[in-house]
Image 1 (cartoon, one colour):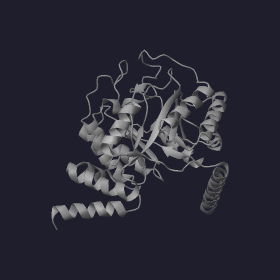
Image 2 (cartoon, rainbow, N blue to C red):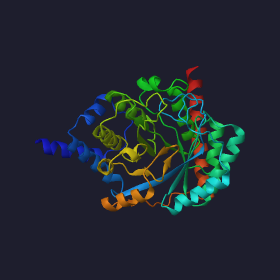
Image 3 (cartoon, helix red, strand yellow):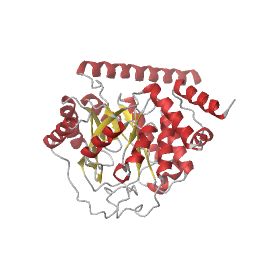
Image 4 (cartoon, one colour):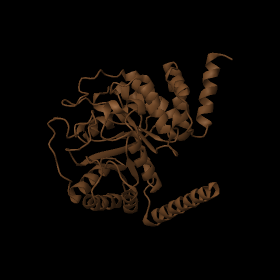
Length: 366
């Protein structure tokens, strides 16, 4: 068998195979080590088996509460531990959020994401956030929130309000995580993701590349994401935005081709997930972005800002889409009240069945 036929066979198998949660580090490292053209070819095969290759899901992100976060994430300008000259802002009024969401919809976004710089939301803030979700949902947009850690009751309330996605990134590998964050553990993040899933919401979780991590850390990050069952419906892959005043402001740049490799490997490992080309696009050339789409990225943030850092303006994105023959993804994915009630009832039934099974297992072992 020739090298060409071997590559084709492997790609065809990957495209047809069911999603896996048991990827080994050796397998992931082997994907990263493929010749660049072979890796992108495999990623394209997988991508086309599950998605329209020229459709890109478009989201807009708004910071609804900015700055003074108690966490010490070394990449984040919103951390209260660092002086980044960022002005603190209280929780936005609901009317302002809805107006921004309407503008995002008119500009072509299908999902509206809202982020608050909290360790976890307080009850009085959650009441306001729930109403934001309800009103943004009423516009016909998918909704996403990132609010820090949430417990079961909070997640259930957000789901009942109509929240479609909850974002909570793993950021990096378990081994490198302590170099980046000390105020929240890796297990804290995994627990929040499990809580969100149990409440019936979709999961948005990814990481940040270019924080000084090694190649093995990038493999381990993707391994952790792929272990989640089911895979996150949305996987944002961020390139570090080096903000003056943060501890990572002078870290060495990651080679753009290594970033593209990570996009391609994420696509192969999580074939049914939307892989989002996220933070760092403002620093990327059009050629790098084009390669990312070729590698399987099929979601972007659209607009002028990502929470507090820059993002390519909408006009530039539209021009790039035109050059590449891409178009915004249009899907009728927003649930009505009846559909949501049915899904939450089914989820509650599954949870009850799991609890009964666990109780029986305990009884049997006694």
